Length: 99
Image (tube, rainbow, N blue to C red; front, side, top):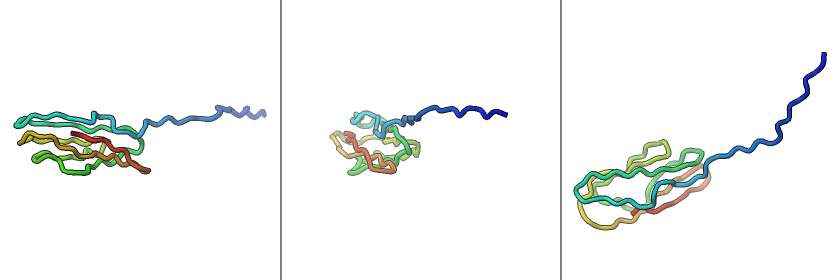
């Protein structure tokens, strides 16, 4: 009985998406109107998303645990607020600023 010849595929390259925050780095809201902004990411493993700095009053950050986080609420005053969104992967992190 003849043995089948081995099959050689050569090397296999695994292409994973880059580990980045993909949502815009700014959001605009209107005083007195409901606001919602979703922070989106790509990469493996799914990152943990957090913030550094204070959110404007009456806005909350909800971790969706799927590589996204939502900032929502109803703003009560005019102004510019700067804070940093951090997506942490198994090895390192990526940062972006949301105004």
